[in-house]
Amino acid sequence: MNKRIIIIGISAVALVGLTVMKLMSNKQEVEKKIYIHDMEAAVLVEATLPSMHTFESSFSFLGTFEAVHQNTIGSDANGKIIKLNVEEGDKVSQGQIIAKVDDEMLQLQLQNAEVSIEGQKNDDSRYSNLAKDNAVPGVQVEKTKLGLRSAEIQKRQIQKQLKSTNITAPFSGVITKKMVDLGSVIGAGSPLVEITDISSLKLTVSVPERDILKFKLNQAVSVSADIYGKRMFDGKVTNVSVQADKSHNFKVQITVKNAQQELMAGMYGSVSLNNSKSITALSVPRKALVGSSKNPQVYVIKNGKSILTSFNAGTSDGEFIEVVDGLSKSDQIITKGQVNLQNNSNVKTTSK
Image: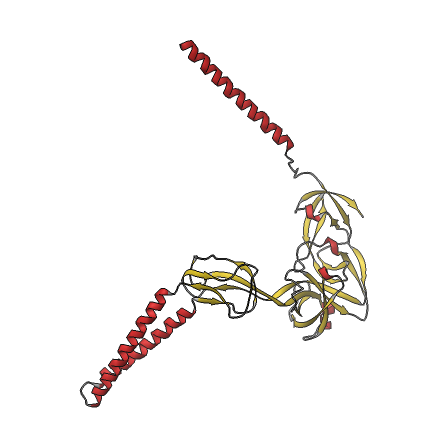
């Protein structure tokens, strides 16, 4: 009997051992099939040096379209959301109710205030008649009138609180973010949704000191969007900065009507300007640009690594961007392969 138990035990241990070995073998086979990217492997890129480029009499300044109106809508009321009438992507009109906060307790407080006012009015009428016959002192009549005024003020306060339980859109636009759900309990100031109005867009460009006098308030200018190629949109200069940044660039804001909503916030855009003479300046290919036009950046190769480098941009003609400062003639600028790069990635180049 004992011998049989020992044999069974040995068999069980052997079975477990075989199972573990099989599982480990399967794991090794799976790991062999899984591709693991070698973070140290050099990425093949194309690079070039900044060059002197001539910008002809018609050139442009690069920027990014932004919504003229974009705001996060908060609540003035406390309580539970019992109605939520919008989803992300919905269009809303000015004054439209976005959400409703539970107002049952406020309704009861309003009813109580109205009962109090009714009682105060009855007391005022009664004491006023008695005062005519000198049956009550005048101070009692005065207290009654003050009590009535206080009750009416309290009623108006409750009515204002009731009104704030209806959260409305302050302007027409599109719901671009929703931060709450039906049933959420919120406090005063809690953000509910973000509304973006793109019926008009603003394009902010950075203009070198030498060109800033070419821009005037209310000046009509032509604006293009990268996505639409050479198609032009009508714009108007709505703000010219009176203070330059440390690189002697000025911010100029152009407003573009967008009734058909063909343009979207975040798109690259350019404002075109005619000039009496051409400009020759250090420039980089526009395709090398990464990041936003507010903070233009390129990858520069240093010691075999890609270094994300910011620079100050000037004018642009669609193919090249002027370098005001931040880059030198000897910097190797990556023009192809940026999508696979991070700061400090190893790279190898096919220079052009």
